[in-house]
Amino acid sequence: DTGVSQDPRHKITKRGQNVTFRCDPISEHNRLYWYRQTLGQGPEFLTYFQNEAQLEKSRLLSDRFSAERPKGSFSTLEIQRTEQGDSAMYLCASSLEGFYLQFFGPGTRLTVL
Amino acid sequence: AQKITQTQPGMFVQEKEAVTLDCTYDTSDQSYGLFWYKQPSSGEMIFLIYQGSYDEQNATEGRYSLNFQKARKSANLVISASQLGDSAMYFCAMRERNSGAGSYQLTFGKGTKLSVIP
Image (cartoon, rainbow over the protein chains, first blue to last red):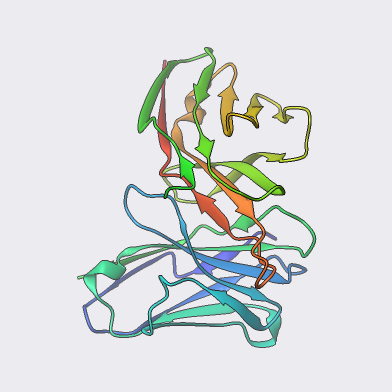
């Protein structure tokens, strides 16, 4: 399977714990995006990488959130001191520079108890 | 202000019939793109169709077509010959160029839940 993959698919955690999600984009794609989707809403942009550089962050990305993309390959999204409001589906997408189409992964569904 | 508006929270359609899902958008950019994605209960966003702001003809992809009315800022999705497998959430999204970082982040509407009735 050469699509975008995300791990884990589901994560249940207790409030106050830290969680980390991983996204593996399509191998030749140099652009990577993170989105968050809460219940009943469309996905909302969180952050964007071009290669290893994080070029844009949404105001939705509070100080408790950090994302990395070492070596411009896979990316991780970490949430520290999780809150119940962080419960959502976290979607990763990738695209090739110069092409408009973003390919999405299956998402990681986070539940904070 | 909402950039993408989908006014139909839910729609029902009889199998084999056509259905139109509404989408209006708001942008001051001259260059932008409009997308429709399908999201089944599994959660993955599946790309359906794309329309660029400079495309003069409406986009078509198999049973999907996009009714693009630029002056009215609408980009409705038409699904012909509905199938049971079309039951899902459908999201309209817009790509605008962010001149600061050069990204092409997508802005999504709230979605329409389509249910196909046998």
